[in-house]
Image (cartoon, rainbow, N blue to C red; front, side):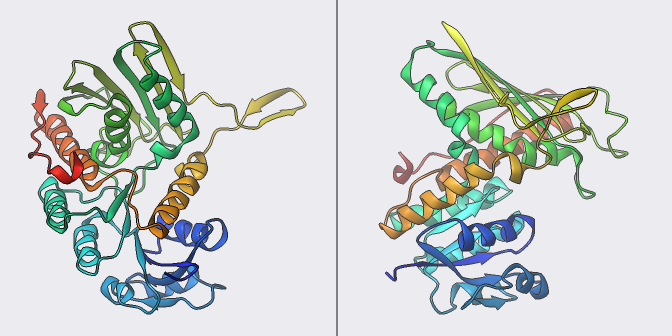
Length: 337
């Protein structure tokens, strides 16, 4: 392998452009070798000033570009399945942003395709597993010092939702991070979902059920609740409190810059997930590059991506149909045991 890992980035939108910047300026051991986006002008803008990078309209062309040794998928979710399978066919290791595949049937096809290879190639972009606060909470829970976890209380707030955002996306887009974080923190599968629908905020676009209160049950009898509010108006806020038999621990209350001026002081609140989780994204991509250069695949697996999609689908059903919906998972292949 060359000294620098040649990465093809698929998608040059908000997330893809940030990853292009990250690989070019922050991550060691890698370079941007190719970029693909149907809007090639957007891709050209994202790689302006970067040398020896090719721009393509089609994802497959980027995978086959000279110097490409790995793939970072940051395109819209519906394009992920084809891109993952194309990368598998070429033996290319992949870091795929969430959702791995929005529909659980497609996500399961990815799991089965990788299982047939007999080795992992995909890491899924659940970056909270790389956040310093989440890592501390995971370590504390794993130590057993607080006893058995009983409940997780989670908060997920955004300043505002984009124009295309639907009520279902509060569950399958926003809460998908809490789904993975809960599975990881508790080391349990989520087995059932109930969604409560408070009166919509007057700040929510017409027809958008915002906020929502999502309740998950786990295989070992714990309960996870998530308040998701994507038009809160004041900032991007993520919190999680673990309540255990012998104590509790809460993250997400970290202090950012406090500005003091005549007449008072105020604490700044992050306005965007790329700001709140900037360090986590940096650690995630660096860990992926380091492992790939060593011929290893670590981090969240394709199975984690599939499980998140299956739970999110159950959550959308609970939102739309009402009541409690059970989560049905396929048998887990030995590759992910």
